Image (cartoon, rainbow, N blue to C red; front, side, top):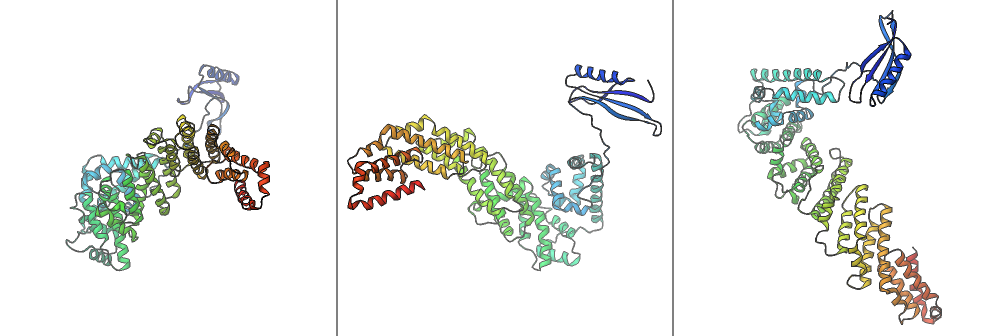
Length: 560
């Protein structure tokens, strides 16, 4: 084989396998023929033939593809030389909201076992020692964060692991050094929080120092509920001076956010909820800063206390976390009211109306709409519809319940699906029997149908579904007219022709007949009476003016 020129054949046997050098030949045609043979042999495979020419100046082969076949094409992998970039660069950055949230999620099990929160871990040497003594827990957390960071970066996992380990070591060294130097303060027993915060702000104004004192104050609080109460006490006793108050408020807000970030902390805040609907109601009241709402009456006092502080604009970070939890709960597949579909529908409507007024940066309208659209879709499952229609008294009530559901769901696809259920109900034998051959007077049944048709035409169904459903009701009405001969009876009555015409038009305009053929039929019969010999004769009578004006008014109403 010539050193200067040869042809290499690469084969990929199937979509899941990798590329491999199969052969190298001197002759170009032989290489391409062999490539075609490989394609016939491996039906799901791919081949690539390259011309390899030796470059004397560079002392290496230059590769040029001359043939490619099969489903896949060869891609040249580029060397990954990207640099890892962490959002946290110093130990102080670990106290920021996003960093604390990452720490919480990565060490949730450890925190819950030790009844601790991220803020405490960052400011209590005893907790740091406990974490280090736990074995591989800290390293596992570093690995989880590194893997997640690498997914959003071109850098590899090991690069992130190295950076994270460096950051962790810096944080450990600082907290141990501060302990040796006596720079981590103890919380003065019995001293009001406002005074403690004011003293620290006056001496060094370091948030780190205040956070350390607060961590010490929580040291003997062995449950998330106890921590919550202690922190709410602090939130209610902030310093009066504006700058000092803001200094203290921000740290209390951060600590409270950490507590309610854990399931046990949130449960301590919300208390026992009977169902998902009650949980969502209380979260909305918290987010809205409404401590006096009915949903908060049975909630723990801590929930009402926090709602007051949120209403005062003092717990922005907490409020943002509550918004995230609220959206997460709304997106869950569970029912709001598992025991009653009708209660579920009512509550979903109330919540949607309230959340629209609360929409903002923390609660994007688009995301809420998506959550309620998904929740609406779950209401349209066959078993849920069966539950909704169960114990309906008759076909009319079934359709009314379906139309009531239309007023409480969102999403075009959901509206179309619900229209399908209404269409099925209208076309059922049960509905036909009830309206066409049911009990009661024909006009009473026709009036019920007209009421249903009016609701459909005013609904948010798409135009095509509206027209289709309205027509189905109109056709049912025509069956009643044909079977009962009710309009024939009006025409054949002993009344004067103009009175018959007025009677027929009144049925059409007063909501007794559905829109469509039913009203058109009544109008046509009325016009026949007016144009009849008797009708024309009556129109010439001196007292006919009022009758004619009334008839003209009703005809104009039908035409509009």
